[in-house]
Image (tube, rainbow, N blue to C red):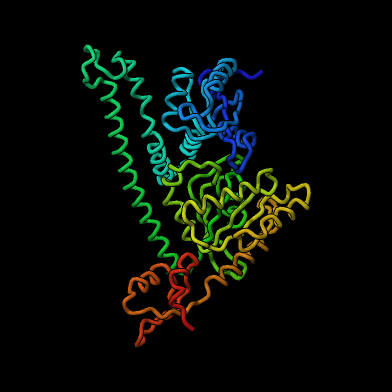
Length: 441
């Protein structure tokens, strides 16, 4: 029998609540989404002690779920001795306030966004990652400061924010503290954005150096735990952290790889995506996610054995659209084929994605290295096709485009003609649309 170490805190006991709105068409069923929510809660260090869900005709503006369901959940929380209730959707500030009042001050009310933010905070190991997570946390907390105010007011006996002096409308200590907290958070958000702007500038400098050297960038994207880090390690031989859990790696990792012809390329692993990814996280990770938008090729890694793999692929595509990634060539990489039971499943999946936006599909196993040579050959073929030298004739008044080419493309030749500047350059796919009107033979 194992003894419990008294110094080790017990995991927080969490009860999960899902909700579905009639007429909506989510990527996953409520049951599937709750299964994922349970994985997120465990990754955050919680113990899941129960769950329930409700289908509603419309979202309750006060409590998200119906009032009767709130009481039912409260009874389940008591019966399961839960310390926190976690909703599988984002709660707005009003939902949060009302539910906290109904469940009581001893029960912590959380939502999917709060849990994901907590996981990110645990896994951010670089300064850049920590800055991005901190910004996302503060932007999430700012509209939810009401609870801090009511807590302080209760402590001071101020009676709803009044000073207790017969109802005169003077600000009590709690309300003053709320304003101080809000001001401090706004100031900290501004500071974090300044620091992250420096990060973006630093990344842009590296991009310009890479592009001048003519080294293409390949971005790995995919649903969390699809095996992106394993694929990066298998291709590059680099020592990167790998774990079978959600959001095991958060900070972007870039490694140099060699393509079949001997040509060099950079392969970068980005943060994993997930359905209902908090908008504050997407905004805060703009500097990291810009690496995807500037890539020459995107590898969308999907875990072929996962029962919701098609929904995962769609979630990744939706997230790429949300961050305004241009029409960069994409390869759909079906990973973990060594674990697939029925080969026909892979064929069916490939057929289901035949009309998607992906340029090509390839099946691999990062663990056994099966399919990796074929994948690298496809990668090099697409890069060669998309980065062929392009001849342009730019009017003299478009000096901005000439400067852009020197910054973000590989300029091979430049000549001054009577009607403009003739330039031969290898242009990244992300910029090709801007130069289409100026192409010449």
